[in-house]
Image 1 (tube, rainbow, N blue to C red):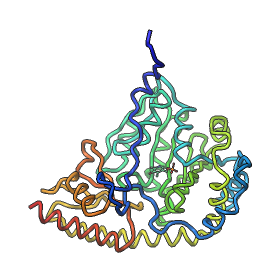
Image 2 (cartoon, protein in one colour):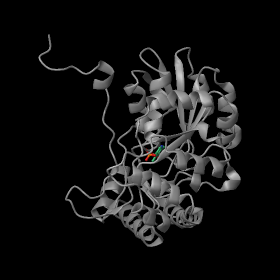
Image 3 (tube, rainbow, N blue to C red):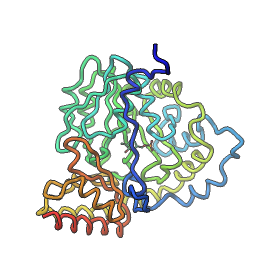
Length: 366
Ligand SMILES: *Cc1c(COP(=O)(O)O)cnc(C)c1O
């Protein structure tokens, strides 16, 4: 017999989530471009609401009623079909755990959000990766990888860490090709950054289909990553199932108050979207001008860009050189992805600085 507690084998196989770093190994402060946070902060209304939240001695509203009703009103959704999560990450866990377990498969594409592997394993299910195409989610590969054991499909649109975006027609084709008993989870963490004209139809599917869950978050464009506010919407049945599993008081008083106030200031989100689109375009142009050094950007609809280093300068060396220069970015030691550096779109000054360092590194590597 073991002389200490033994975790379940599928738990033992989990590699804990690695967050983006805020400083280099030497502890020096750096510009943090590693976690896709909003460089503009958050709405002033949300900050003001922070001090007016319910007293800390009181439990929060376990059902986040005011927030769900405000979200429902804004998106035209019955609040009964909205579930709040302590970040949308909690909802991804709940979805996988509710519908998949040992012997089942949770399917996603390679180069997907690193949390998906953990989400699948925590449920005891087997994570299955379909091949990506040009760093993007590939609907044909996903559909070809579906088996009788597939229970949940996870897809982020835009995708993290590649920034790629599938159009409405592809999302519809994926849903149409899945068996009815498979839950399709569409992770829209970066939806607020997408041009409204390019709506991928996920919300319509969540409103009309019994096997679609959309997850969204206040962590990115709303700038409330530290408050842990995510939400999901799908059929009343799916939402009811997930509600049984979630933490009873999963959103703090402060988190609920700040998110509610943030919804009253959508001008801040719109400003963030425009700022991001502008700065991203300028940065992408600067990097793509280094094509003769083997640098190029994967097309991104999000608030980050995957810069591919396919010449003398390696992805790892670019990541390390940027850290040395005071810019913390993200490098994934994953085969096929390791020539890339994921860089959050910061302020214009920060991104001009990043582009200048990349040019120096690329020229020095010749
Ligand atoms: C950042 C991110 C999330 C959001 O996580 P929260 O738990 O809401 O902070 C979800 N999915 C993807 C793909 C992300 O990049």
